[in-house]
Image: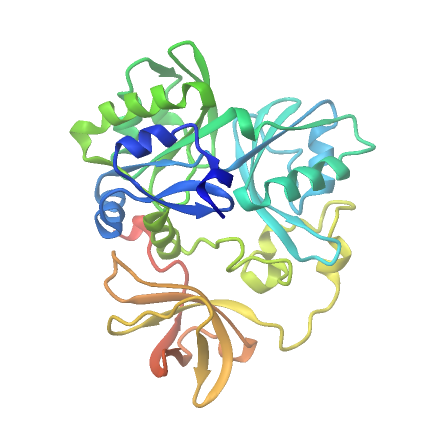
Length: 370
């Protein structure tokens, strides 16, 4: 895809001026790094990083039956979450396969914001709109008018609190997976204590026309706290360490929630929803399941590499990297169920060499354990 065909973030000029390197991501031209992947990764773990996530999709569902429509459209129960809360959920197809993973924010009695992955924007928006028919609810894809800036890391609370011109209610009292309204120089902001790095942090939703101003003010506020701009490369290693799946790797339409450790996301106590019959249908006894693998040395398994038991292929790596925080290789892999028990000794075929790997408990990294 040529650059002229790619979608540009409202912050593109800011990234260009900062000397970012770019990559295509789901049809968007997005920063992959500014300095080095390692420096940006460690900044988030030790201080804070600022990310442009404006490629994500924002789909609003409003109306008296908005909650009921989402209960039918998604795998979880959204109608009962309180105002100011967020919930992770899944969009399933009729066979119970995963079309996308999402975060749903309840903004009001009759207002929800569904945040979908960039590559699944139209799939998600169209599926939710179709499933909402018959309910008194309106589905609007507002992705083109919304920008998303994330501040992640232990210094994030101090930085966001210091943004000049930004006001909100008690930021320190905002718990994890909660959201509230804010104001930045007269513009509405949705402030959410969510993220995709395994660290504390905030995600700030603002009109795209004011994104550059908010970015600059946040960078200024973070100057005394070690804040650095971060690209997609370090976001990937951060989420991998935190045991967070990536759509297209750990989540696909070929996989059901139970295979990827997401059975808890599906609420079978509620009534009808799209994908219920598929989820309840028996799975083959040898259906692959997702595990975490830890290796020694420095050679990491990558997506598509074979997982071995002796000379037999028993699975495949879905994501892998040399962990910058832990100092050893880690990977997600889909393996046959009999090889999924914690402590099982396997190997990863890394370019013709069988690198020993052990099945370990997820996540690989937790800030609470530091």
